[in-house]
Amino acid sequence: MKRLLFIFSFFFLFVLNGNTQEVEILTLEDCLRIGIDNNLSLEGKRKEIQKSKYGVSENRSKLLPQINAIAGYNNNFDPPVSVTDGSSYGVPYNITKTLQHSANAGLEMQMPLFNQTLYTSMSIAKVMEEISRLSYGKAREDVILQISKMYYLGQVTAEQIMLIKANITRLEELRDITQAFFDNGMSMEVDLKRVNINLENLKVQYDNAQAMMKQQLNMLKYIMDYPAEKEIALTPVNTDSITTVALTGLSENIYELQLSQSQVQLAERQKKIIANGYIPSLSLTGSWRYAAYTDKGYHWFHSGPSNQWFRSYGVGLTLRIPIFDGLDKTYKIKKAMIDIENKRLAWEDARKNLQTQYLNAVNDLMNNQRNFKKQKDNYLLAEDVYAVTSDRYREGIASMTEVLQDEMQMSEAQNNYISAHYNYRVTNLMLLKLTGQIESLVK
Image 1 (cartoon, rainbow, N blue to C red):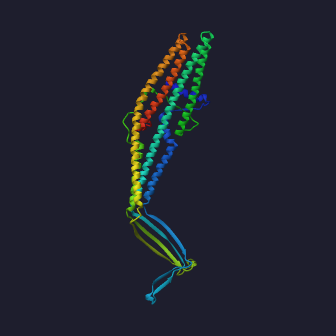
Image 2: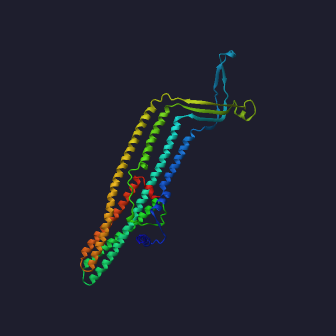
Image 3: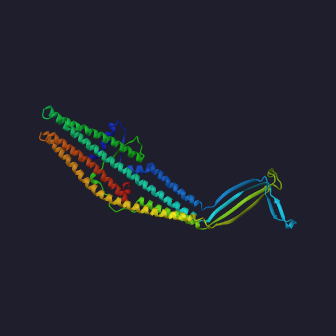
C-alpha cells in the first residue's frame, strides 16, 4: 500500500503540471546502468583509454624500421671544383670542375637495434594507459555516487511530500471542525484564523517540495544523460530493510590510492628515461638510390652519355655514445628525484586522508543510524500525540493552542526524520566507496 501511495504521489505531481505522458518508474539499479552507459563525462574517459592505447602502439612503432623515399635536384650556377693529386699527370694538382646539374632519388632506412630510451618510453606509455583506466574507474565511481545521492534525495523528498500531504489532510479536517465550532459559537474566530494560517503554510511547503522534487529529477536525468522530455518516478524505500555496509576497513584498492601510486611509477620512469640518455644507442641504416649529373638540364630528356643514372646502395651501423652534455641530464635527474619524492608524499597524504575519512564515516554511520531510528520513532510518536490531542479537541477537552503546538512538534519531528534518513543513507554510501564495495549497487 505504501509503495502504491508513493508512486501515486509522482503521478499526481505530473498531472498537476499538465503532463499526462507515461511515467517510467526507475529503480536505483536502472538509473546506475543508464548513467554508466550514457554519461557524457564517462564517454570522454572511455575515449581517453582508447587514446592511451594508441600511445602504446605509437611508441612500439618506433622500434620498427623507418623507411623514407627521397628525391632531390641541385642547380649549381657556379659549380664547385674537385682538387686531387696531379703528380701522375706531371702537375702538382689536378683540378676538376663538377657538372652544373645533379639529381638523385631513392630509399633510406633506419631501425634502432638498441635504444634504452625507446624501451623506457614504451613503459611510460603503458603507465599512462593504466592511469587512463584508473581515471575512468574513478569517474565511474563518481557517477555512481552522484546518481545514488540524487536518487536518495529524490526518495526522501517524495517521502516528505507524502508527509506534508497527510498533514494538510489533518489540518483540513481540523479546520472543518473549528469552522463548525465557530458557527455554533463554541470557538473564537482567532482559532479559525490560526488553523487557516498553518494550513496555508503547509500548502506552501507542499508546493516547494514538489518544485524541489521536479528539479531533483531533472538533475538526475542530466547525470544519467536521460531524455529531459521523458518523465520518471522513483521506487519507494523500505526504511525497515536498509542494509548497513560491512565495516571491513579502508580498501587499499580504491581508485584514489591506485592513481596516486601510478603517479609515483610515472615519475620513476620519467627519471629513468633521463638517465637512459647516458647509455649508448645502436641503429641499423641502409640506403638504395640513383644519381645523375649533366652540364645541361635538357640532356636528361635526350639519350646520350649525359643521360645516365648511377646506382648505389648499402647498409651500415650507427653507434651513438654520449660523452658530455654540460651536466644537463645531471640536473634533470635531480629535479626528477624531487618529483618522485613529492609523488610519494602525495600518496602517503592521500592514504592518511582516506583513512581519516573512513574513521569519521564509521563514527557518522553509528551516529546517523542511531539518530535515524530515534527520529523515526519520534515522528511516529508525534503523530500519535497529535491524533489524541485532535480527538480531545473534538470532544471540547483540549484547546486549539494545544492542537497547534502538537502539530508544530509533529512537523518538526517529521523534518528531523527526513534529514536523518538522508544523512544515514549518504553515510552508508560513502562507506561503500571507502571499503571498495560501491560496485555492489550496480550488481
